[in-house]
Length: 485
Image (cartoon, rainbow, N blue to C red):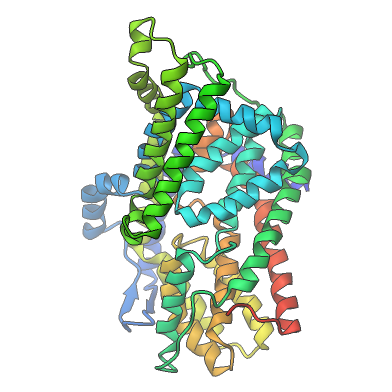
């Protein structure tokens, strides 16, 4: 296994700098769109019945699209705004010394043997907080691993596996359950107009999946990924900590933590009492997170940083400036990654591939269990081309759900099969919006990290999650256990 991962990373090393890699991918998409347009590639939309044709970027319309949307592609790229906003607060918390303090407290009390499992588990649960896992947990995991004397990239891998690879699993019903079940109902009503489906229709299976992903993710981290990182000698760069002026203060840590807890309780109460409406609140969750970290950092810093010099008097401004200056490489990488994702979506190639693949499945005569397993595999492949879980299901559900209903397979099972496949390959596709962010996190600790490094780290998780989930699904179906309620 380690030899295989080494070969994957070696292939990745032959690629240019990650930023140049995404620039090259943009060029490849431009050429591919031209070729598929010449071939007349098209598909029929399952809902509108419109003919969707591949669009060439080597055309007047394509040129104008690239020319007029370059700025908006960058500004509207999903990870960009949330990360920058969150880093204002996180930068304050880091510069004040609070984040080093919480890591110190964690390392003194947390059992080292269960660290990987805890991070994967927390990563799975973080899905309830939208993108918070990507923005907060993954970079923090690297620091926690490093404080334990372990490889920080292994911490990134473990947290990323939980946040993204375990996207569909959780202990409670979340927003994704509501969105996907609504799309499933719309598709099912094509066959049965009065069909209804609860968001909890997959709950029991996904509840068990949370612990399955936690165990598998922890084992992969400890016995494959981290040994691989140590064997390859991935160089860990020492960060510049010259800006950190605060000393550890137990009393300041306790007071700022209590204030942070009160803030968290107040935010949760705001959601529960509808003072913060759920829909609007989820859109502003990153801002709430940034405010929380900023509050904690200001309290801790005011108690620990001596205001003896002009620089220390303005430590809040300095911390935010240094945070953003350290993200220059990330911004450049995001620019080209945003263009690549936008170009691919505009050409309609991913959409056409998803529709044609789903239509192919309708022509096969297979047993229900085998058909569901194939849908899992099919979803995992489509996920490599289209990042949004709801967008993919909006396209696939009108074909797959009615088809399986005619074979006496409940739509809840179709939805479950899709979710299993969709989650498993999130962590190995550069088209996933946060993939470039993970690479940027890795380069903060090892500047030699590249696309091959991330793929070599995450492929074991992806295959292990996919295989173990399929096995669990087959066992569940064979036993006839309820998948939800």
